[in-house]
Image 1 (cartoon, rainbow, N blue to C red):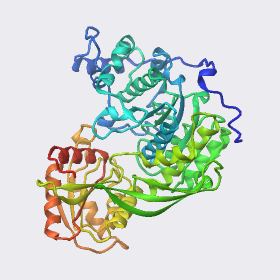
Image 2 (spheres, one colour):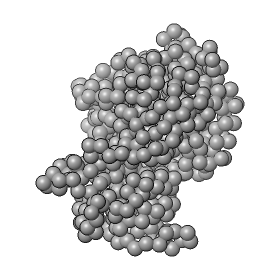
Image 3 (cartoon, helix red, strand yellow):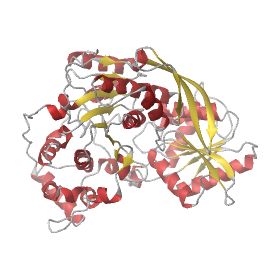
Length: 531
């Protein structure tokens, strides 16, 4: 029996009193700004009932406006959890009414959370899932047993706690953000729906993230997925600082699953933090080895067959797994989810079996993460393949390039790229050149609704061309085109591939941001262009 099993008591059996919950005072300037924002959105105490979206739109949205430098770094006071704690207290501490698996990391946290949520749901455990960002609707962020919150339930979230929401709008809990209030309402929704365990993905970093409010008594385990150089300015400027921020979700004596790490210095930070807190460390690859076998095509989509060889899990026998999430990197994410499921199982939560793991992994769907679809023409005849992936770091772009060329080794590729302005454009462009596309189309999309946060296509073109001059880069000929919108970019990509006249069709790859993926999906669905 693992060392953490004997010490765990489910939250419903453990009374808990929080200390040190005094909220820091809010400046008059911050209160005035909040009041002005509320006024501009016509939110007043007289509005009845409160609509959730109206409440959220009246608050500062850092996804739209950008994140202040070092805001999520360890030791920074830019993001203060005191207001979040006070809001949760006013809502009756909903996060204390279920157990949680808290997931942080740069790459793979969304996939790992989705895999684990699916396994737990298949294990007859009432499972909540809270993720970000979303693709098409904010309702995607909140789900119970894999069903996203309904329009009616989402619209009524604020009204169900209208008095508390009015206090929040009046600045009673400090200058709260869109993400903080949405997170609190999601936890309240989980409580009302009698969720037993919630898989919660951090928004940014970990230590100062609005989701980092779980007491050790409630934390079944933490998961740290691969850490990469994203949100560098917001998280402290170095891979070590990013790792320190992510490590902040660990809690004393609670187990932590540490996935495969691309940077040794990040792994060292995580292991040292776990040692200081006396956290049992679980390494997924010590428990199960996953090996890709083949990629298969079925009903207009693709999946990969994977051999699972468990060597530290007596309840899991060697078997084949069917994953709809493609790419070698998804094997690391699936292994982390299996390891976390093992931790949950050892704590007596749910009925986790080999069958629930196999089915949970098979039925995991996650739009925009190396999602392969087939396009069709006006006659509903299949045409080109479509790959949607939110890759926006060098490592994720390299994984995308490797997977695309592994599945489509000879097909001509049209890349469509749009990125937020705070990413490492140079490194991403260099990694994407491994695709050796026939054409690259650069465009702009709103980033969380804000077009000003999108990198200019000209900047991306410059980085793409500069990367081509670097030593070690593959030499190939491609057309580079700028288009004003995603609709125009898709049309251009298809026309360029049609000119290639390849018997197996071409491949359109949309990447650089989940917001680009969302824009592409919207355009294609409106034209009934997906097979």
